[in-house]
Length: 312
Image (cartoon, rainbow, N blue to C red; front, side, top):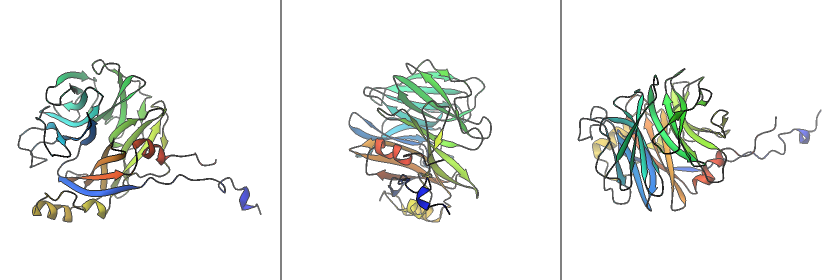
């Protein structure tokens, strides 16, 4: 019988899953949000769905705005009629992407502003594509836009690149994420002095049920999945009330809602910790916005889901 100490797994040190603490629900009927820091202020970008999907929307159409997390002050709405938005902060401006006109359209509008009030707009059309969620990152001086599409089995991710946020080139078809099965609700991140692109995405499980997972790639073609997935799994912690302003009716909705999903997670660093917003609910239109945090930076959190490869 072989000595167990000769087993290649005997001395292997497996990575330990980073501890993410769920804080609880802060909004009803809110899904696509982005935490970001701009000029030392923590904001929550919100993609507010139409009144038919979000009764709290005072407008008939969808729109975007920013919320100062400390004061709860809201910026002037913009991007009316755009959907599934996401935001990205540079030193001197903020960029927002959203699908123009309808879910599954072929045109993404890139909004750009230095003050979160006055916005320049550039429409980017990707012919014959049906686009849903989008997200921006930057690596080696080049912007990368992740495009969620319904190619193959809904959904998968394609990628486009730009030097200036105005002129975009869709990368060839081999630059794709998980075309063999469902992948939704994406966010993409890069880190200083790190060769990888990190993608948070929604994985579908039997049930059906859904959990937020993570993968990474150095070239946007070959992908490594974390052995510690999922990043966020639905559970009773999602129902905690993190905003005391939720009404009795909203709290009752939170208490009785079907919860089979943690999705649409996005994050940023603020004052040495990682702020995370995510959605929970039934993945069929009744969703809630919740907050979580990691007691460290994204540079600790995202690579922390990988570690050394196991023996073969």
